[in-house]
Length: 140
Image (cartoon, rainbow, N blue to C red; front, side):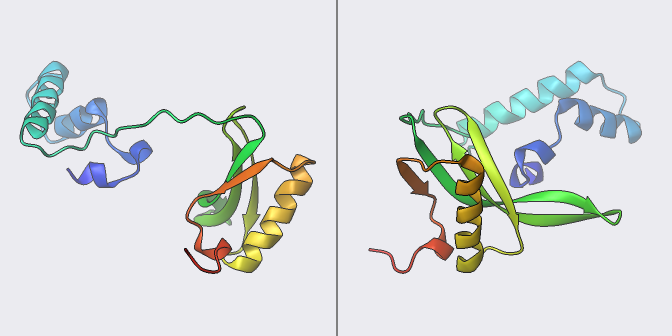
């Protein structure tokens, strides 16, 4: 259950769980581990506990963009470091632009927005801003 609190890419899969069990002298086979995990997931679903991610299909017209802050991990001086980025994605074409910034405040948002439009060389018809506190003066 602890794995499901992690980002999806950081979670252990069946193969990694099996390898970790083998390191602990587990006598069973890979197939046994897969069957157990499948049964465990089915039981969770029956009990009403769900970890299954659900998605709604979104449709996006051309020339619309979404803006949001994100972080990316980089290696600087041999150490992992998180960098803030302002990301403009273009869902219709699956394109996107990003600008690294020192923080996630209003000044960084405005400087980043200007840099994104400079990279993009045009303006989208509509911007969707995903609950970004640094871009909102007050909510309605």
